[in-house]
Amino acid sequence: MFNIERWQEIFETIRKNKLRTFLTGLSVASGIFILVILLAIGQGMENGIGQQFQNDAANRISVWTGVTSESYKGLNPGRRIEMDNQDYELAEQKNEDQLEYKSGLYSLWGQLTTYKNENGSYRVEGVRGDYQFLENETLTAGRYINQQDLDNYEKVAVLGNRVYLDLFKGSNAIGEYIQVNSIKYKVIGVYTDPGGEREETRIFIPLTTAQRVYNAGEKLRSLVFSLQPQDKFEDALAASEAFSAQLETDLKQKHTISPTDERAININNTLENAKRFFDLIAMIRGFFWGVGICTIIAGIVGVSNIMLIIVKERTKEIGIRKAIGAQPMSIIGMILHESIFVTAIAGFFGLIFSLFLLEIVGPLIESEYLLNPSVDFGVAITTVVILIIAGALAGFFPARRAANIKPIVALRDE
Image (cartoon, rainbow, N blue to C red):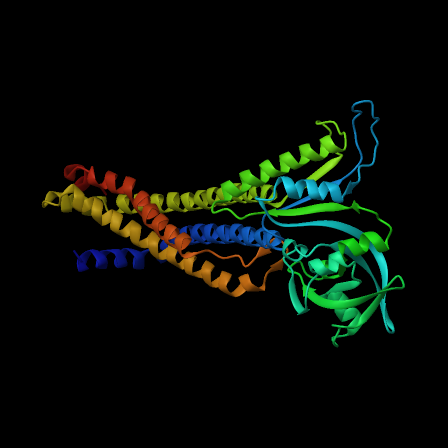
């Protein structure tokens, strides 16, 4: 029930002790402010890292080879392992039901590319049609490589947007011919990549064409796969880990590599990387919660100490109230009411200021691993609950002390 006299008492106490009340509220407001800002930074880190994983297919698995580091079955270490079309076909046939997208890859770095009077040095990659989705690329003009291009060894090329701007300066490129080390390719498409310009300085040609034109035979630089999507992250992670382990075993058996050799076959699983990063983010977020809560506790201690002082100052008043019939719960309610009010108002100021600051500054932050730091509605509600609990805790012990004051002792207080 609304009690106007109690509110008058609270405001009268605040009015008499403006500086003390302000400093007490400031400690609570700063605690909530720090907590919200730290949680927003944690969310921004999660957003930024999540954006990095969105640059390619979410469940992408890449395989490339290196040099053996162990002797095995009479073979010396130091052998260079090279994959070929048979490795790709083995993985494709054995895991046909699991695969969503797949491609072999043959890369050449620093290829001089010219169009009329313009030229530049770019990476040329022979790929299959699925590679567009493995790289999460979006066509802005034309089409991507298709099966007919692969079957007919077509000399066609899909340009990254940066290559297109360098060579064509924004003019039409579809149907035009570029020269890559004096070999002509017809431009059939232009793409953009969420990874930015670094990923858009590439030229894609049919894999079969790259292998034939550059005398690669059936060699491949790497294999790239993505698995069918799952409803749950845990299921998708388990499937990708099982696929990666089986693929590594198959490749080691085919190329006579020791099962314990960790350098000959390299596999990068984006879901495993994502799990490691998000586990780290969860730990960081937990640490931020801890720091924020500790800061709030410091504020609560300050409020509690102030309430103890108030109880001490009002000892005689409390004794008179009890002498004329005030119940202990009434005394406790009076102290808790004031404690919760001061804590809640100060905390709301800290919360509103932090949200306002994030709204202004958050969108201006441009970092690779920190993107749009913010807090959602659930976090805001949580901080409100923390405020109420904090106010109750801050006033509980002083309130209990006030309720235990004996009227005869209180009336003797000077």
